[in-house]
Amino acid sequence: MSHRVITLVLVARWEPNASGRLREAALDLYTERGYEQTTVGDIAERAGLTARTFFRYFADKREVLFARGDELQHAVRAAAVEAPEGMPTMRVVAAVLDVIAELVGRDRDHSRRRQAVIDATPELQERELIKLARLSAVLREGLRERGVPDPEAGLAAETGIAIFRVAFERWITAPDERELIDVMREATARLETLVAPR
Amino acid sequence: MSHRVITLVLVARWEPNASGRLREAALDLYTERGYEQTTVGDIAERAGLTARTFFRYFADKREVLFARGDELQHAVRAAAVEAPEGMPTMRVVAAVLDVIAELVGRDRDHSRRRQAVIDATPELQERELIKLARLSAVLREGLRERGVPDPEAGLAAETGIAIFRVAFERWITAPDERELIDVMREATARLETLVAPR
Image (cartoon, rainbow over all chains, first blue to last red):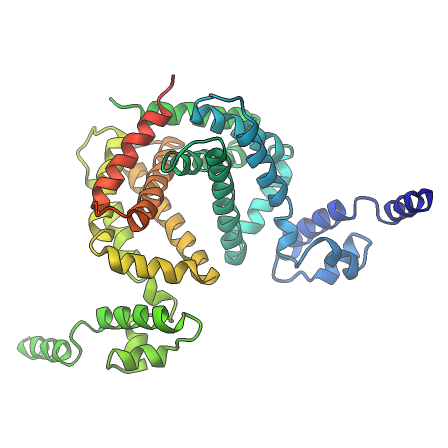
């Protein structure tokens, strides 16, 4: 038992935050040289690690940009399922959007640089669209688990992700320094006004 | 002048509706053998045409499934731009959705078979997500051309495409025989109820 604990501590010493260092190194290199011109070897070298370590964390040089997507999916599903019973569906979606904003909105400069790399590379744009579609599907599943029937669950999930997409774009392009959570809440309010029957 | 007219008529005689025949042949083969197992040569042969003719209409065997996407984009943009002045934004989006329903909702059996091929092939799912993202961008551009500012234009466009996605899925999976336009209008009404502030 104590032997195992010591081993874990040693591993941690050898490669503190290897995953985060690799992510930062990758984004730096993609920004400096371009995505196509960067290899996994380059990324590992920049992070002071080996390619073997890289592949312990990421399947390939594309995934290093999307690694936090799984974390986001888990958080979205949990937030949907765990919202108070009886909460109106779009309130649940608003709570989920707050959780997304907290996870995604921590570092605007990082998000801007990442988006610039994605915008320059069709392969990465496709990957991002797939991740967003998956996020919408996970939110829909979470809503269904609460008892929201289709098509409401699908409509609410798609609408939530639509708000996220629009607010995220605005957040990284707007000259002001607002927090993502505020941009997202404003977008939700605008959508309510837009969609309200007249 | 009269020479040119005669030439056009002859071309039309040689290959009546070549594009439509190739699309049908491709869908038949993708359904029977699978997308991966079908070549451009197979498709041309089934349609009674040559591979050279195929490449006059489509870039590759993937595009043959998405060829009508451009037509849809043009129609969406035109419907958005040409809607009566002063019409509320979500009414414009509803009018655009009617146009989409008319173009997409003509043949449910065809749509079902096409969707089954796409659902079985990740490469085609990616392509479809890109086409939908492009459709949303075109709708947003059309709304901006009417004078709708961002983020409203982006929100309304994303919401419109979200309604289309959910309604289309429902239309091809539901056991009833409703028209796509009715499913789409019902989804729009449900979204209004969902999003209405309480």
